[in-house]
Image (cartoon, rainbow, N blue to C red):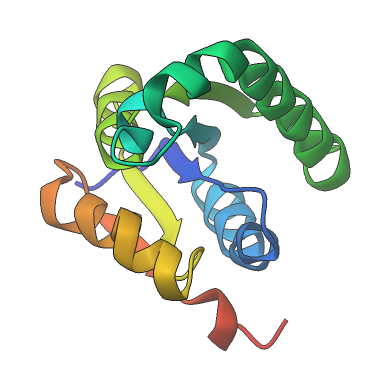
Amino acid sequence: MVEIKKILFPVDFTTSSTKVLPYVKYMAEKLAATIHIIHVVRGPEEFSGFEMGAAWYASFEGEILKGAEQAMTNFLEDNMTGIDAVESSIKLGDAVEQILKEADNIGADLIIIGTHGRKGLEKIMFGSVAEGVVKRAECPVMTVNPHKTGK
């Protein structure tokens, strides 16, 4: 028997995340599942090929993480009030790696992820997070194209 009690929802705090959110809430409600929200801040290794590189990043890492924590607080306050079964985390590093690691750590039964958080040059440079998660996840992954939700 299939039982889904833990849903992992990676967010990037763009409108894409809020467009995917109704699907996450619906699934969590219907399945009586806990929602685990994760945001991954790209680590210094992602910037090593750029002019300022990892040394520049390291000097701002604390501020970047603090900003991500505030963005998560705002996201939860704006979108998750009244929902008790919600947990959140901020991770540092490669988005795909950290999402997969978190899925394993919490024992996720399902990952729900938006397919189009980034566009254009940024997508080419950093790749598709959703694609990497779909290809490597140990649990089922539901993808939602936020630009096709009609919301």
